[in-house]
Length: 302
Image 1 (cartoon, helix red, strand yellow):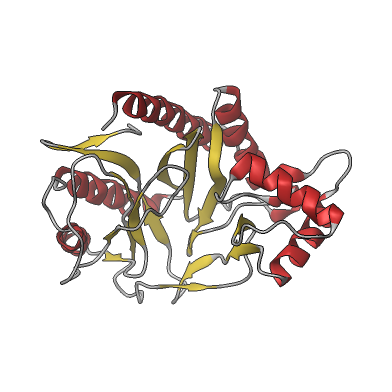
Image 2: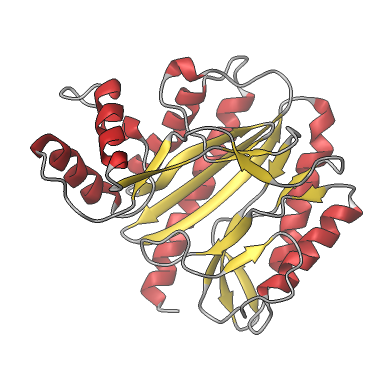
């Protein structure tokens, strides 16, 4: 890997790790944690550090595995019981890292959170050039099963490229008989998701999401929609974004959402549906971004 790129990724990784530490401190230090305020803590720190969020801060409570980021304070607070996932991405120019933690909100979920952390560590230790990604998935599945948990079979880790969160190859969370080979210099977000053994171990779409991205690079003819399109393109390129990022003195949130709905109707913008475990069981997740070197995987977000 180019030394300049590696240095930039390591810098982004340090910001990402600190953002997650601040999220954990914020959660543990308050009796009442508003979801929007939690996202603001994370995203404002990233920007103050000279980087940008690679995607909106994701907060997954209990059965919500991915793709939820609050838009308003009224979107709620953390519950007293359960498990919460905080998933954060950082980019410096087009160089992206992505990591996540889980925190138990009540005692019964401590073991589940520790299991997710352990499964991730084992997966990272098993990554080296020439290995098939499906073998990493097999290891994740076996490690989860040994701890009496079930991996989420239709979620996976992903290779990261420049301005691309999903750059082609995936690292599954279950065994795959046919899978690509891991190569030196590749960057992966490795993210085991686990749930209870009685769960189905799959996620489904629950409802329209609160996270969007440009799906087709074509500026609309309507001037007002074109201005919003230009703002999104300048800030995010093709990466995911939150409508709240574009609220200002000229556009309130309902107006931004209305314009995004119009952009969706013509296929220019797409939304990510919120993903939940199919049987409603809680999900825990841990994630790091690694770069593949000759001797194995080097953690960038530690």
